[in-house]
Image 1 (cartoon, rainbow, N blue to C red):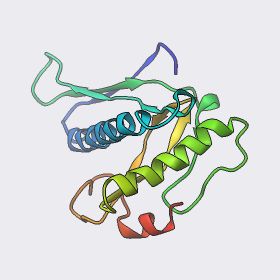
Image 2 (cartoon, one colour):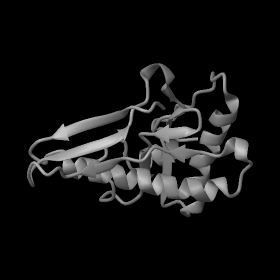
Image 3 (cartoon, rainbow, N blue to C red):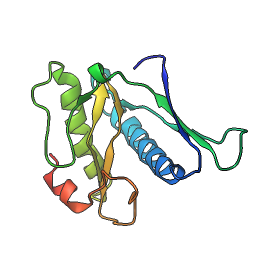
Image 4 (cartoon, rainbow, N blue to C red):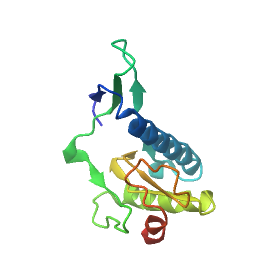
Length: 154
């Protein structure tokens, strides 16, 4: 992660519903990660990049989405929502932690959801997907493919 912010302007508010949904996903992931971190050694602790949506003074129909920019060269995929798990990472500690975290989310939620499609820079995760049995929850997020994603994830 850098000290640079990624800013996306949305002039007509079309993007606001999607950004709000993504913010809910990131907040839920961060909340469960805090629980996960309380149970693991510090070397396995994880965190999530937080995003924000702002309405600038320019008018009620304009919105801005802000999150920390992660350089593509440092951005690595741990797993996805179709069963892939990256087993060729040089940093096995965070890979193991990410896979354990996905499993933890499923167990902790009593099978109601599973967090996967984890991307990282070190222990900082972003762009996660939440697979859920509730087809109406997180339906604006392309990554929520409901039950098939839960059953194919490790």
